[in-house]
Length: 171
Image (cartoon, rainbow, N blue to C red):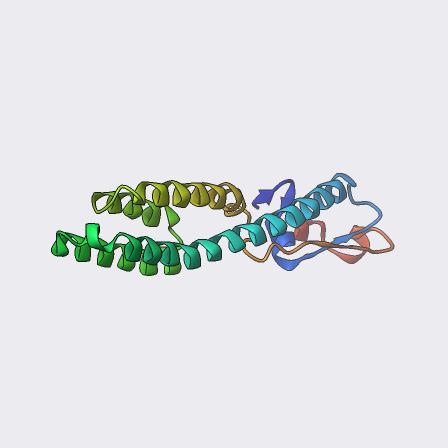
């Protein structure tokens, strides 16, 4: 049986822990710690989602603004400019939006510096946002309740577990 923070994974998946008088109270403490952790994960995940969507919306807007402002300088080599901009667009919309790999989107942004030095600032901003997203989202991905982060309810039953269940069922 797999455990996460001292709580059995089947309890996490069902969302309910039934306790009887003869059960150990250490599991109650583990469930309470797990529920607190889940609440913190839910908050961090919402922050990470907010950062992700802002990244997805603001990056194309910034790219468009820089491209419009620097168009006369950028398009001296039209083939290179269209190749890099189209490549950035494909990577951004496929890998960033659908695969959620902000690292690839940020790496391709660095290639845009071949067109104009202003894109270095764009790359630094993208890298900062990507770092914030990864710092919030990466620790929560190993959670068995990811991405819903459900809590476990504790139900107390009267009597002893042996009266109601076969002791081997718990294993």
